Amino acid sequence: MKTFFQKNIEPNRKVRLIELISLVVLLISSVGAYVFGTMKVNASPGKLTFVKEVEMTRDIENEECDLEEMSACEVVYQSEDGEMRVMYSQEEYENNTETSITAYAFETEDGHTLFFDHEDVTAAEAQTAYQSMMADETMVVFNYANATFILTLSVLVMYAFGRQFTTYEKCWFLSIMVLATIFAVLFPEESANGINGIIIMCLYLLDTFLNILCELLISKQSRYNFLVSVFVEITEIAISLVLMYRFATLATTLFFWLPIDIISYINWSKHKDDEEDELTMVRRLKGWQEVLVIAGIVIWTIVVGYLLSGLDIATDFYNNQTLETAIIYIDACASAVGIANGLFIFFRFREQWIAWYICAALEAVINILSGQYVLLILKLGYFTNTTYGYIKWTKYIKSHQEEKKLSLF
Image (cartoon, rainbow, N blue to C red; front, side):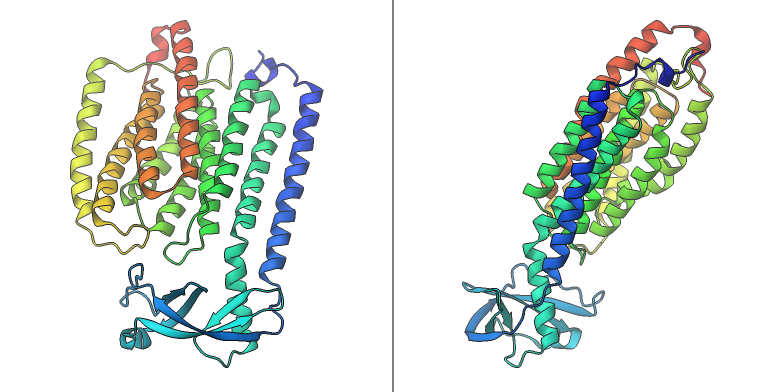
């Protein structure tokens, strides 16, 4: 009996060569960007030359500091000449009531301007300030390096497991990752909760890569999607903790998705197709079961949304209470649909694709409200692959109507 892999036609050698060349070029490009960015950030400012004194105004409107949780607070001062960031201890911050400050401007050997709140600047202070400034300037370089590295992984997967994917699937997968790479460079993430925006963007890109790979494997009725899904959950837990948001999804991931991935892999392994071992037998849901699922989603959204909206969780990812509350309720609904989706996948129901549509739409709204534009590429991947998966599963179900294939376990 031939397996699914053995039935696939040997990939064209020219295509394989193109994939290999792309892999090498992307890897060199990523490594080169990392090296260039690191050299720029760690370069020496050289000898500083005093330029002038500058009166700067404190940016009170965007200032956030929780003295109960933070041992030091950063204050930003601005003027037409530039910006200066000063770190104050708790005591200094509490006693600092001034709305303006006199800053001292110094010019580095490469023509950059650094600002300090004192004139007697040490070499260590100059190096730290210069590194901070260069880190901001080279953010696009590091975002490009991270994006091309994730894109390299994408090409590597398609190259190493080329026989498992059709030409359409390869094109879809790589197109989504190329778009994610472009968005990562055009729409860089700002720092949040003390975490650099470059790290946040790297997590977004990794989440996109793992999610679309997982989705693609589900559409192919492959049980191996659950192995990838475990890494998806770990990444999304990290994102929630870093940004201090979407706690309904965080709890759902910890206590539902991780366990369901493991037991779903076991259940799918028990229902292999009689002709193709790599395929899992799937089926459709009944009408009364759909009604119960919808009712459960509504109740979960109201109860969980109400409970979470009453919690006082410190985060600087949002600065609007109404927006934060709205996202909490949308997140609660998305987590409920996600649970339904997880159960549909576990029981191998085709309706899991409809749940994917709804969940993707809800998460797209959250991404737009949160300014997470690179994650919209992931949602585009969801919508396109969900249609592809629904069609594939429907065709399979129509051609496999035997009663023996309708058992739940």
